[in-house]
Length: 333
Image 1: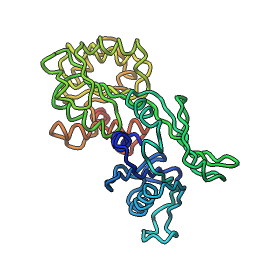
Image 2 (image 1 turned 90 degrees about the horizontal axis):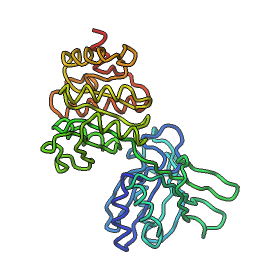
Image 3 (image 1 turned 45 degrees about the vertical axis):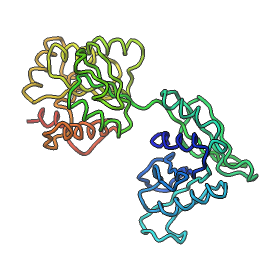
Image 4 (image 1 turned 120 degrees about the vertical axis):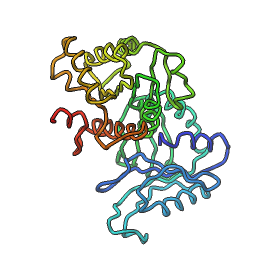
């Protein structure tokens, strides 16, 4: 639901009613995770998705009907339900409900917590022996798994929203701008840090927090404040040693970090390794550094490099990939 929060807010503030469909259970593999949602706004526009196209039309009609009638229902969609879909389409359970200020009065507070990166969980009754109970929402700030919970007399869908993973890019340049765009598509909250005020211009990095500070000092402060954890990714997008080496020195000493990458050519990386080795770092520690950052896909432009880095970020975040990172290829050669 996080990806359509702004669309939901627009409908909520309009005072009109849309239809909301939420994926609450899948059978077998699914291209979208449980909790994915589709909003049909009052004008018939579609925002978000609950499947890979197999049941989009049918879910759309169900959401439109929910908005029109106010009916709330847990629906099953599969290849045996009369839909003209491929036999390879799996089975999904989707909860459809009307969505408006009256139907979900707490939503503005939920959206506010998501925007502030505060944990928030919404419990929705998707089935109950008493139809009047179906669709009731309960909001809490406690963390839970996103899942469908079956109770003796009801089924409750638990939708939990925690802070998104964070990417800190050190160096305000065209590569950082391109990577900001790609990382936000992957759900990262992006921070740009550069000590040069002329380069660290917020308008150049839409959707990112922009900080003017020395990289190593900012990272030290963030680590000291407890804002760096195993989901945090760091990319050094500047190859200036006076910025980069102090930064990497701090980063390599952090006990928890999701990803650490640095841009630059193979020869630049050789000089980087020499400086870090002179600072006392051994081979095991330096192996944590992805450099040159990104998969070796023949990237040339900033956006192409951003795609390569985003792919590597996703592979590391998913704890594995069949492809070989560029820095591993260089080490083997």
